[in-house]
Image 1 (spheres, helix red, strand yellow):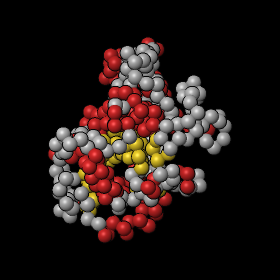
Image 2 (tube, rainbow, N blue to C red):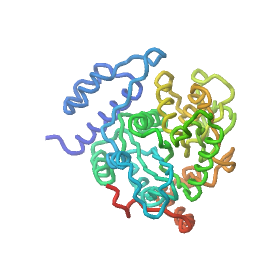
Image 3 (cartoon, helix red, strand yellow):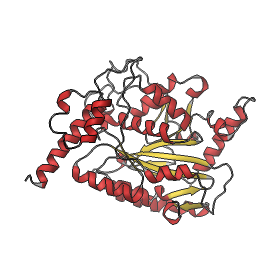
Image 4 (cartoon, helix red, strand yellow):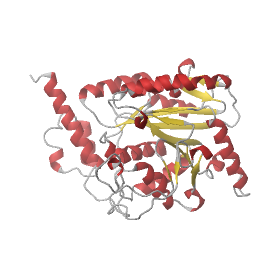
Length: 376
């Protein structure tokens, strides 16, 4: 009988190879034989749905498969109940934040749930959170299963959990958003190594909605959903205007490298840094549909909020900072910790420490915490 260590090794190899080939749109026959016979459902799915066709304008990229979905978040969106007694119920602004994580980063996810992710309602804003992760080893997978059974906020897709494939993680989140998030919601995405100061976010979103209403065509009924169609992609962390692509293969910025064969122009279009940005969910669906006919670039924030955005129709192409503080520099809403910490410092602990510093601002606001409400 094989040892537990051997089983763990075999499962890890299987997960990596399966994720690699699915993510890159290639799954030749040898990928089915013979290692994958134990998981008959996954084997049958891959045989039916995955092939090696290239991405073209005529032939779109294969859609993603989700072994695990955030069941509790889906229940809450479906019920659409406004249960916080402390906040206004008038025209609530609803947001789903899809947080890019990795399967092994359980401590980071818990630190988010204990801090800014604990807030379910703030003023007139309703907030749901989803953590998206890729494939992993058998031991970590069992922890992910337990985590989702408890919190119901994990979205797992068949794909590699590394930086160079993060664009596919973003696309998987966008596909799920298209299939599950109503059109009167905002879709937001961010990383798991940051702290969001939500204090003034409802006010800024109301201002954006008011501006969109004032500029919308008079023929509109001006329902909240129609007004949201006019709201630009909002850069909460930072709005970057016309930066040069990174061409160095070595050095600190090498991970941002963009191959001239993939992107030949000397300037990038305006875009949102991936620390945190928001998009009306109706537009996310369109961006995702466009993305399936385009070659993915590793710089997911540039690709989605810059390059793909330019392929949207008409006035839906607009992008802007949520306010002046997010223009060309870090805004006051998001503290991104990865670049601010020594590598020896644990990010989850730093998130808790930073939250203690800004949490006092919430005492002046009307809010509810997720774990204090009967949401199900």
